[in-house]
Amino acid sequence: MSEKLHIVKSYEEQLQLLKDTIVKMGAGVEKQLENSIQSLVKKDISLAEKSIKDDELIDKYELNIEEQVVNLIALRQPMAIDLRETVVALKVSSDLERIGDLAKNISKRLTKIGTDLPNDITKNFEIAGLKASKQVNAVLNSYLHRAKDTAENVWNSDEEIDQMTNANMEAAIKHLEKNKNDIQKVTQLLFMLKNIERIGDHATNIAEQVYFLITGDYLEGDRPKG
Image 1 (cartoon, rainbow, N blue to C red):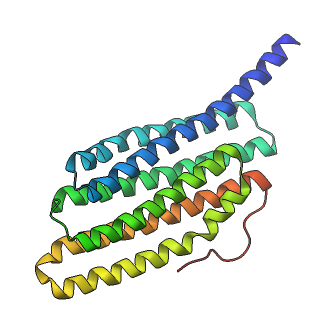
Image 2 (cartoon, rainbow, N blue to C red; image 1 turned 30 degrees about the vertical axis):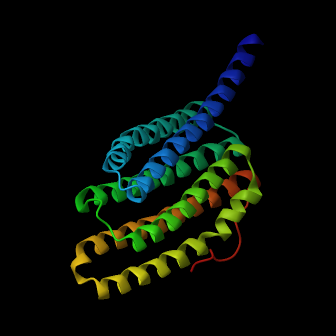
C-alpha cells in the first residue's frame, strides 16, 4: 500500500515539475522579450546582447520539457486530463521558444544597424512591443492560475496587435519617403515590427491551448485578425 502511494505521489510530483518548468520558461521568455524591446527603446546594445545570450537558456528549457513529457507518457501512461496537461505543455513550450527566437531576432537586427534610429518609428515599436509583452504576461498568468477568461481575452485581443503593426508599418514607409537615407534602418525596423506581430500570434496560440487545457474544448469561431 505504501509503495502504491509513493508511486502516485511521484507521478503527481512529475506533473507539478512539468507545470513549474513551463512557468520558469515563461518567466525567462518574458525577461528576454523585455530586454529586447528596451534595448531598442533605450538604444542600449548591451541589453540586446543579453537578450541574444538568454535564448540559450530558453532552448534548454524547451528540451527539458520535451524530456519530461516523453517520460510522463511512456512511463506513467497518464489519464485523459493528465494527458491533456502533458500535450498542452509541449505545445506551449514550443510557442514560448518561438517567442524567444523572435525576441533574439529583434536584438540581432539592432546590433547590426546601431542605435541611431528615427525616434518616431522607435516610439511606435515601443507601443506595439509593450502590448505584445502584456499579452505574453497575461497568457502565462492564465496558464499558471488556470484562468480561462484571461486566455479568452488574449485570444480576442490579437487583432489589436495586428492593427497596430499595420499602422506602424505605414508610418515607417511614410518616414522613408521623406528620409531616403534611412532605408537600411527602416527596413530592419519593419522586420522588427513584423516580429512583434508574430509574438502576438504565438501568445494567441498559447491562449488557445490554455483554454483547451482548462475546458477540454477549443475556442469557437475564427481567430480575430486585423
